[in-house]
Amino acid sequence: MMKQIKVLTFGAITEITGSKNFLIDGIDSTEGLIHLLEEKYPLLKTVQYAIAVNKEVIQQNTILNNDATVAILPPFSGG
Amino acid sequence: METGKPKNIFVQGPVSPSFIADSIQKHSTKTNIGAHSIFLGQVRKDVLDGKPVEAIEYSTYEEMALEQMHKIREAIFQEYQLTCMHVYHSLGIVKAGEISLFVFTSAVHRKAAIDACEEVVERIKKELPVWGKELFEDASYQWKQNN
Image (cartoon, rainbow over all chains, first blue to last red; front, side):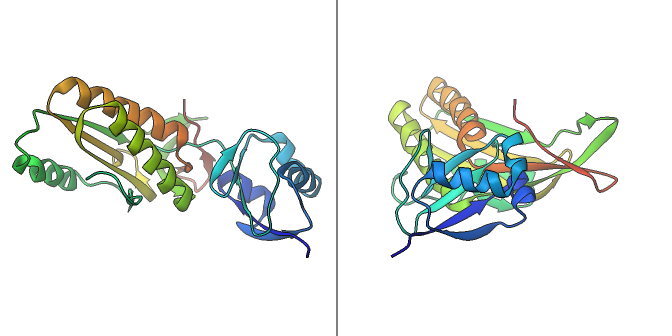
């Protein structure tokens, strides 16, 4: 079965992708996902963001299980 | 008493001064408390390229923010001898001059209350997935950056 993952975007990143959430098929890792997204949305290469897999910020390439939720997070500015 | 499930910290719009006053009042029955420390974040009318900020519109990744806040809470209670701790953060539009963050820590003695309050504020700014969009009068905007 082909893996399906859910992608969430926020703030300035949503303005680049044009969508707050979408599904992507056939991706195995966060590196693969980023590669695909940066190809589709070249502006992503020009901005800062962090990646969270299932609500945990990751620092290195991470294997994605089926149904994983990956969030693309611009720099936090709460408070 | 302060552990368990993640609590909601988000409120729509600004935190009102009367809500803050009520929160203080509610602690009068907890007579083991000797010190409260309160941090209030207020939306500043920064001027960017000659245009004053009229308001900030806050958004969040709520599920992740509440889990992260829960972890911060647990760590703070491990580190400091606190009696209680309350955090409220605005979502949606908060005008310049209004309150968008209310952190309230209470302890038997002042040092724990003050130090815990400071650490919570720093961690909120650094670790919570919350974004502020600075809105200008002419309907343009800019994504806020934390220093």
